[in-house]
Amino acid sequence: MATDQRFERQSAISRRAFLKSSAAAGAVSAVPAAAWAAEDSGSPRKGGILRVAHTNNPSSLDPTTGRGGSEHTILWGIFDTLIGFEPKTVTAVPGLARAWNYPDPQTLVLDLETGVVFHDGTTFDGAAVKANFDRMLSNPRSTVKADIDSLASVEVVNPARVALHLKYPDSAMPLILSLLEEGESYGYAIIRRVRELSGGGIAWTDGMLYPVLHRLEAQDCISSRWREAENGRKRKYYALKRQGHKALQEQREQWLIVHGSLAKLWGV
Image (cartoon, rainbow, N blue to C red; front, side):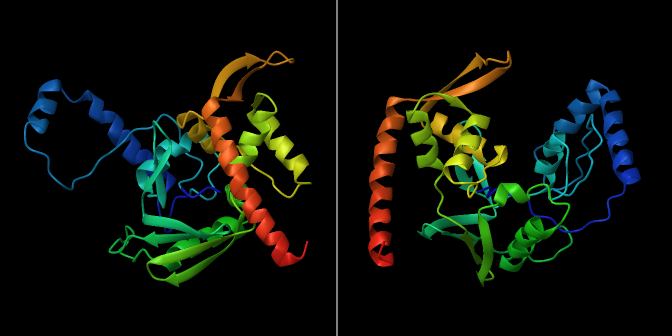
């Protein structure tokens, strides 16, 4: 699932105010170099106002309902995430969630940072996390609903801890490695194959699949290359590497143990 969702509070930012601040930011480029040198000569200090100009007008400043891909460059500067990632390795790093763990295959527990407030002074806590996830799932205009389709519900354990209950265990890694064991493939083909194998029960999106592919590539489990498809379009194909075969074997052993245990419990 997509745990790097952005958290927001409603704020009255009008189109006019946004364009005004953007125009002001654009005017900064006309300041002489000598003025920049004078401004930068002192030691770093906290506070102040940073104005940023952007080439495109965003369709929304709401990360739940925004439709434009270019808006991410704006949203990343405004909203914090529960879990971030290291760009080079796509390794998960703490954000508003300082730690996390899986007590069982279908539950993700997040321990939240304390002493954090929204821009209006409202306290950030478990209730705020739940409210945001609930809105992502229920808002009819939500454009991120498919990215968290595996999320069944969010439980507030206490103000500093939430439990995300999943519809099914996170099977992304073993599924992808198993499919690539059959031969190299590209993103959409992987999504379609998983949907077919699960009878429509597992419906991945690009937003869910590609971060996993990038992480597996950073871990040297898979490789990628651009290739021209039969229709003439260029697609990025992924293939399993030696480290990927090793990781798949480990995953297979773990999942067979889980499957065998559940089969005994369920009398299958």
